[in-house]
Image (cartoon, rainbow, N blue to C red; front, side):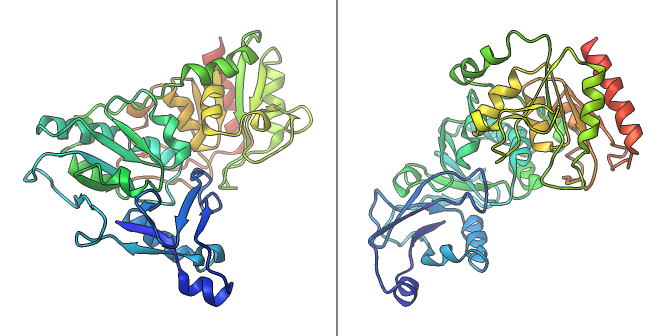
Length: 371
């Protein structure tokens, strides 16, 4: 584990001043990391943010292209330091004395879908701890925007932000870095095969979040969420596709949430209504999707969330496929019974469908769902 502090040498050489404190977020590097982190030149027990080894390494490497990070440094926290440091579990823990365990966020680059995909492994790991007689205190540190995704997960006892303070971390006996390799999580949970555990991924939306959005959609005949854009531009679809869909089902109401797009109303002429300006958080997105009758998306992050909510989700697989071999998308039917993929071959490769083939497949799925 590493602590996050101000770098006095860099501050002195570059700014000529030595502030006592500074505050930063890491949203520029990861849009889901929204925690305001307070960092002190001379840290105390109330202000000493902690990061996993892997996350500290990734952020140190990011200094090359992110100059504002150079004002900060990561220092390793060792047993002989002034701070109480839990023991780090690296591999098997069956011979260790039972205790409380905190899972530490270990990957800056894991996205929304990646986080949901480790839910079965987290649950299996929690079950193994309990079977061995360990404490039910099984906490997790994760990107702040992901906290709502853990709503209702009784196997997680506490949710901490991406950089928890030392006093929170020291309340645990052990820490375990997670999110690097799904096979490592499988080994820690002692699963011979993924099918040996419950793989279905589910989400619950809090009552308050759903009540905020539900009245917006209650009077509509059918609510359909359409997302044509992706961070991978090869996946993004032509807006003309939407016109064809709307022509087939003109009685439906169409919505989207275009990330960081401030355009209110129709996203493009005749297009779906953009709800992002009214609800910019992941909590809002979950609540919006939970009110839909159908989701059609080329963005796999949205596909994961919608399908985990149990919403019929037509997922367009185009462009590059970011997969975990033998896991995703191979086991998609076990993860998400309501997901309907278009563009996957039988051996889970991209089928390279033509535009007309995509359109025909979408209409067939829509007819099946909206009949």
